[in-house]
Length: 373
Ligand SMILES: Cc1ncc(COP(=O)(O)O)c(C=O)c1O
Image (tube, rainbow, N blue to C red; front, side):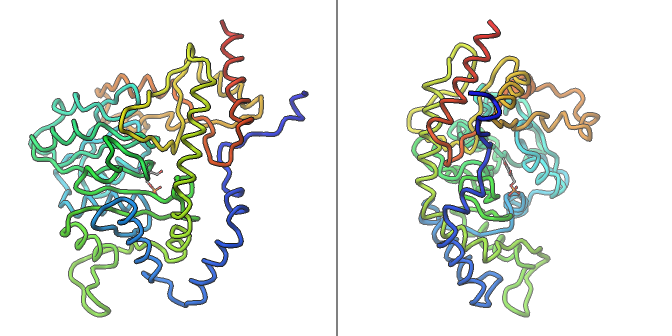
């Protein structure tokens, strides 16, 4: 078949999701619009209750983004100027930006081969200013939370899980969001449980965190006229909450399809030329991203694009290597983070891919490396 006759395989397919859900989803949106109740409505409360049930946690507070979920978590734990918080430089900028936003200093540790936090490196960056650790469950694969929590306990540090990419993931049979003092989730349109705009939420089993965030996200309002402390506006929007309530009912299917897609890749890509993380016992990776690590990454990416296959890189420049950080972190060496940035490639993994499309991607990857040998 000639190349121009081949259909493009898109990296994401949000318009297909809308097409799929249109009739029922528009009905849900219409209900909110016709209720005239748009701010912190029943839909938001219903969503918070649904999440508590799904993730088996006591409290959930809907906020307007994953970034705000991290910022509000840090504020709830009283972290601010003069404090240091440890996180990963291979994450999306938001993980470190949230630390900066509360006036604290982000400190980076290196990662394991599978891109999760290397707990053995934590001790070397802990000092008297260190207040918390933010492990990032990047791609939907959870960090080794048992090991991280042992160190946190020993040094009296708080733990905030950056669960933005890991809704529904499990580590040692426990959900993402179980292990930290609290956890921050994003419902950005590209996430597995996605809104059609910005959104996020915090989960916690701690009443004091819940009580603080609930007021803080809404200008500190105790009621219409009374304010307890300075707050901000970071409420989950009611229309987005309605969309999320609708999609939450279907999310198990979305996660299963993504896991099925990952298995198909693993079965059909020639293992000689790529690395991907192993399945771990009692864990569930939910594949917000399916990342392989390869030699000649840029050439492979171009080859795939020439063959009408869109891929992505999450993220090509580690946070400490961003121009505005270079001066500050010029002596920082994170060998795994830095070498992975040159090797990682995110393949399409969305739930709308067909088996034949995944096989086409695998064939193309195998052909690329066969021709290079
Ligand atoms: C690891 C990680 N943390 C935090 C965020 C921030 O979430 P949001 O975009 O909803 O603010 C994201 C979003 O992409 C993320 O991937």
